[in-house]
Image 1 (spheres, rainbow, N blue to C red):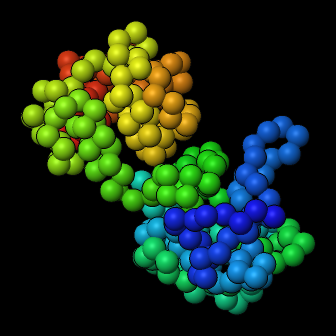
Image 2: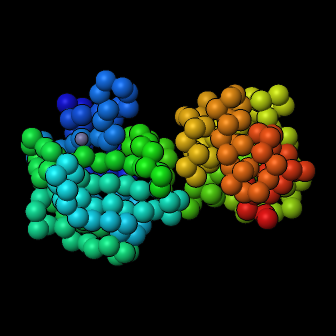
Image 3: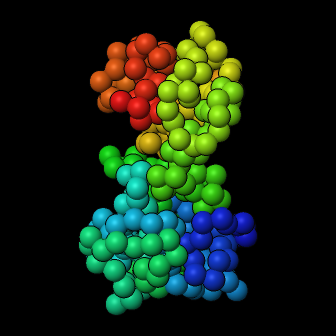
Length: 243
Ligand SMILES: [Zn+2]
Protein backbone atom coordinates (compact mmCIF):
# COMPACT_ATOMS: atom_id res chain seq x y z
CA UNK A 1 0.00 0.00 0.00
CA UNK A 2 1.49 3.26 -1.17
CA UNK A 3 1.16 6.58 0.67
CA UNK A 4 0.67 9.20 -2.02
CA UNK A 5 1.86 12.78 -1.79
CA UNK A 6 -1.17 14.80 -2.95
CA UNK A 7 -1.45 18.42 -4.04
CA UNK A 8 -5.17 18.28 -4.85
CA UNK A 9 -6.79 16.07 -2.17
CA UNK A 10 -10.00 14.07 -2.55
CA UNK A 11 -10.01 12.95 1.09
CA UNK A 12 -10.72 15.51 3.80
CA UNK A 13 -7.84 14.65 6.14
CA UNK A 14 -5.40 14.90 3.22
CA UNK A 15 -3.91 11.42 3.66
CA UNK A 16 -4.25 9.10 0.66
CA UNK A 17 -3.15 5.45 0.65
CA UNK A 18 -3.42 3.83 -2.77
CA UNK A 19 -4.85 0.31 -2.63
CA UNK A 20 -5.14 -0.17 -6.39
CA UNK A 21 -3.52 1.71 -9.26
CA UNK A 22 -5.01 3.03 -12.46
CA UNK A 23 -4.36 0.87 -15.45
CA UNK A 24 -5.96 0.45 -18.84
CA UNK A 25 -4.90 -2.72 -20.56
CA UNK A 26 -6.69 -5.65 -22.06
CA UNK A 27 -6.21 -8.18 -19.25
CA UNK A 28 -7.12 -5.96 -16.29
CA UNK A 29 -8.78 -2.60 -16.77
CA UNK A 30 -9.02 -0.38 -13.73
CA UNK A 31 -10.14 3.04 -14.86
CA UNK A 32 -9.49 4.85 -11.60
CA UNK A 33 -7.41 4.86 -8.42
CA UNK A 34 -8.63 3.11 -5.26
CA UNK A 35 -7.65 4.70 -1.99
CA UNK A 36 -8.25 4.79 1.73
CA UNK A 37 -7.51 7.57 4.19
CA UNK A 38 -5.68 8.49 7.36
CA UNK A 39 -4.83 5.49 9.60
CA UNK A 40 -5.85 3.35 6.61
CA UNK A 41 -9.44 4.12 7.51
CA UNK A 42 -12.44 5.86 5.95
CA UNK A 43 -12.68 9.61 5.50
CA UNK A 44 -14.97 12.25 4.02
CA UNK A 45 -14.70 12.61 0.24
CA UNK A 46 -14.09 16.12 -1.07
CA UNK A 47 -14.15 17.80 -4.49
CA UNK A 48 -10.71 17.87 -6.13
CA UNK A 49 -11.47 21.18 -7.85
CA UNK A 50 -14.30 23.68 -8.44
CA UNK A 51 -17.08 22.34 -10.60
CA UNK A 52 -20.74 21.52 -11.06
CA UNK A 53 -22.46 18.27 -10.08
CA UNK A 54 -22.84 16.43 -13.40
CA UNK A 55 -24.62 13.40 -11.96
CA UNK A 56 -25.23 11.57 -8.71
CA UNK A 57 -27.07 8.34 -7.99
CA UNK A 58 -26.67 4.61 -7.50
CA UNK A 59 -25.90 1.61 -9.65
CA UNK A 60 -24.82 -1.95 -8.81
CA UNK A 61 -21.27 -1.40 -10.01
CA UNK A 62 -20.46 2.12 -8.78
CA UNK A 63 -22.64 2.04 -5.68
CA UNK A 64 -23.56 5.55 -4.53
CA UNK A 65 -21.57 7.98 -6.64
CA UNK A 66 -21.01 11.63 -7.48
CA UNK A 67 -19.72 13.02 -10.77
CA UNK A 68 -18.41 16.56 -11.13
CA UNK A 69 -17.81 18.51 -14.31
CA UNK A 70 -14.94 20.99 -14.15
CA UNK A 71 -14.10 24.17 -16.01
CA UNK A 72 -12.07 22.35 -18.67
CA UNK A 73 -15.04 19.95 -19.15
CA UNK A 74 -13.29 16.93 -17.62
CA UNK A 75 -15.42 14.75 -15.32
CA UNK A 76 -14.28 13.41 -11.95
CA UNK A 77 -16.08 10.38 -10.46
CA UNK A 78 -16.25 9.39 -6.79
CA UNK A 79 -17.60 5.85 -6.30
CA UNK A 80 -18.75 3.39 -3.58
CA UNK A 81 -19.90 6.14 -1.22
CA UNK A 82 -21.74 5.30 1.98
CA UNK A 83 -25.54 5.22 1.72
CA UNK A 84 -27.39 8.42 2.75
CA UNK A 85 -24.20 10.49 3.05
CA UNK A 86 -24.16 12.32 -0.31
CA UNK A 87 -24.43 16.03 0.37
CA UNK A 88 -24.83 17.37 -3.18
CA UNK A 89 -27.39 17.06 -5.96
CA UNK A 90 -27.29 17.38 -9.75
CA UNK A 91 -26.40 20.88 -11.02
CA UNK A 92 -25.11 22.10 -7.61
CA UNK A 93 -22.03 24.28 -7.84
CA UNK A 94 -19.20 22.94 -5.68
CA UNK A 95 -15.85 24.42 -4.70
CA UNK A 96 -12.51 22.71 -4.30
CA UNK A 97 -12.40 20.89 -0.93
CA UNK A 98 -16.18 20.81 -0.45
CA UNK A 99 -17.45 17.61 1.18
CA UNK A 100 -19.39 15.38 -1.23
CA UNK A 101 -20.13 12.50 1.17
CA UNK A 102 -18.51 9.66 3.09
CA UNK A 103 -16.32 6.83 1.89
CA UNK A 104 -18.19 3.52 1.85
CA UNK A 105 -18.34 0.10 0.24
CA UNK A 106 -21.53 0.25 -1.82
CA UNK A 107 -21.83 -1.36 -5.26
CA UNK A 108 -19.11 -3.70 -6.54
CA UNK A 109 -16.70 -3.26 -3.63
CA UNK A 110 -15.24 -5.59 -1.01
CA UNK A 111 -14.18 -3.03 1.58
CA UNK A 112 -14.61 0.68 2.26
CA UNK A 113 -12.56 2.73 -0.18
CA UNK A 114 -12.84 5.55 -2.68
CA UNK A 115 -12.57 4.73 -6.38
CA UNK A 116 -11.58 8.06 -7.92
CA UNK A 117 -11.63 8.45 -11.70
CA UNK A 118 -11.14 11.15 -14.35
CA UNK A 119 -12.91 11.04 -17.70
CA UNK A 120 -13.35 13.20 -20.77
CA UNK A 121 -16.92 14.14 -21.71
CA UNK A 122 -16.96 11.30 -24.24
CA UNK A 123 -16.04 8.85 -21.48
CA UNK A 124 -12.38 8.26 -22.27
CA UNK A 125 -10.58 7.47 -18.98
CA UNK A 126 -7.52 9.50 -17.99
CA UNK A 127 -4.89 8.67 -15.39
CA UNK A 128 -6.01 10.52 -12.22
CA UNK A 129 -2.50 10.57 -10.74
CA UNK A 130 -1.16 13.80 -12.33
CA UNK A 131 -4.35 15.58 -11.25
CA UNK A 132 -3.98 14.41 -7.64
CA UNK A 133 -0.32 15.44 -7.72
CA UNK A 134 -1.17 18.88 -9.15
CA UNK A 135 0.81 18.29 -12.35
CA UNK A 136 -2.43 18.81 -14.25
CA UNK A 137 -5.37 20.97 -13.16
CA UNK A 138 -9.08 21.13 -13.90
CA UNK A 139 -9.65 24.86 -13.79
CA UNK A 140 -9.33 27.47 -16.48
CA UNK A 141 -6.16 28.83 -14.87
CA UNK A 142 -4.54 26.18 -16.98
CA UNK A 143 -4.92 28.55 -19.92
CA UNK A 144 -2.88 31.13 -17.98
CA UNK A 145 -0.16 28.54 -17.29
CA UNK A 146 -0.10 27.68 -21.00
CA UNK A 147 0.14 31.33 -22.06
CA UNK A 148 2.97 32.01 -19.61
CA UNK A 149 4.83 28.92 -20.83
CA UNK A 150 4.44 30.03 -24.45
CA UNK A 151 5.56 33.55 -23.62
CA UNK A 152 8.62 32.45 -21.68
CA UNK A 153 9.71 29.87 -24.26
CA UNK A 154 9.31 32.36 -27.14
CA UNK A 155 10.94 35.31 -25.38
CA UNK A 156 7.77 37.40 -25.16
CA UNK A 157 6.77 39.44 -22.11
CA UNK A 158 5.53 36.94 -19.50
CA UNK A 159 2.22 38.27 -18.14
CA UNK A 160 -0.17 35.40 -18.92
CA UNK A 161 -2.21 37.73 -21.13
CA UNK A 162 -1.95 36.85 -24.81
CA UNK A 163 -1.99 39.74 -27.30
CA UNK A 164 -0.32 41.06 -30.44
CA UNK A 165 3.17 40.99 -28.89
CA UNK A 166 2.85 37.30 -27.97
CA UNK A 167 1.41 36.41 -31.38
CA UNK A 168 4.23 38.25 -33.16
CA UNK A 169 6.80 36.06 -31.37
CA UNK A 170 5.08 32.78 -32.24
CA UNK A 171 6.90 30.33 -34.46
CA UNK A 172 5.85 27.52 -36.75
CA UNK A 173 5.71 24.19 -34.93
CA UNK A 174 5.19 20.84 -36.62
CA UNK A 175 6.81 17.41 -36.85
CA UNK A 176 9.30 19.00 -39.29
CA UNK A 177 9.83 22.55 -38.00
CA UNK A 178 10.87 23.33 -34.40
CA UNK A 179 9.86 19.81 -33.39
CA UNK A 180 11.99 19.95 -30.22
CA UNK A 181 11.49 23.63 -29.37
CA UNK A 182 10.78 24.43 -25.71
CA UNK A 183 7.27 25.61 -26.62
CA UNK A 184 6.25 22.06 -27.70
CA UNK A 185 5.93 20.86 -24.11
CA UNK A 186 3.53 23.68 -23.21
CA UNK A 187 1.39 22.97 -26.25
CA UNK A 188 1.32 19.25 -25.34
CA UNK A 189 0.24 19.92 -21.75
CA UNK A 190 -2.41 22.36 -22.89
CA UNK A 191 -3.91 20.07 -25.54
CA UNK A 192 -3.97 17.22 -23.02
CA UNK A 193 -5.76 19.41 -20.52
CA UNK A 194 -8.33 20.44 -23.14
CA UNK A 195 -9.15 16.74 -23.55
CA UNK A 196 -7.01 16.00 -26.64
CA UNK A 197 -5.59 13.06 -24.74
CA UNK A 198 -4.19 11.40 -27.86
CA UNK A 199 -1.27 13.83 -27.43
CA UNK A 200 -0.09 11.63 -24.51
CA UNK A 201 2.16 12.75 -21.62
CA UNK A 202 4.33 15.71 -22.63
CA UNK A 203 7.85 14.84 -23.80
CA UNK A 204 8.74 18.08 -25.60
CA UNK A 205 8.90 16.46 -29.04
CA UNK A 206 6.38 17.09 -31.82
CA UNK A 207 5.97 13.49 -32.99
CA UNK A 208 3.04 11.60 -34.52
CA UNK A 209 0.83 11.85 -31.39
CA UNK A 210 1.40 15.59 -31.32
CA UNK A 211 0.43 15.93 -34.99
CA UNK A 212 -2.70 13.84 -34.43
CA UNK A 213 -3.83 15.99 -31.47
CA UNK A 214 -3.08 19.25 -33.31
CA UNK A 215 -5.14 18.05 -36.30
CA UNK A 216 -8.01 17.20 -33.97
CA UNK A 217 -7.79 20.64 -32.31
CA UNK A 218 -7.65 22.34 -35.72
CA UNK A 219 -10.70 20.42 -36.95
CA UNK A 220 -12.69 21.41 -33.84
CA UNK A 221 -11.65 25.05 -34.27
CA UNK A 222 -12.26 25.55 -37.99
CA UNK A 223 -8.58 25.64 -38.96
CA UNK A 224 -6.99 23.80 -41.88
CA UNK A 225 -6.37 20.35 -40.36
CA UNK A 226 -2.71 19.85 -41.34
CA UNK A 227 -1.02 19.36 -37.95
CA UNK A 228 1.13 22.46 -38.48
CA UNK A 229 0.86 25.34 -36.00
CA UNK A 230 1.56 28.69 -37.66
CA UNK A 231 0.30 32.25 -37.40
CA UNK A 232 -0.92 32.01 -40.99
CA UNK A 233 -3.25 29.05 -40.51
CA UNK A 234 -4.86 30.70 -37.43
CA UNK A 235 -3.95 27.80 -35.13
CA UNK A 236 -1.80 29.99 -32.89
CA UNK A 237 -4.63 32.53 -32.69
CA UNK A 238 -7.05 29.79 -31.67
CA UNK A 239 -4.65 28.34 -29.10
CA UNK A 240 -4.11 31.79 -27.59
CA UNK A 241 -7.83 32.63 -27.79
CA UNK A 242 -7.15 35.62 -30.02
CA UNK A 243 -9.87 34.68 -32.53
ZN1 LIG B 1 -11.55 0.85 -8.16
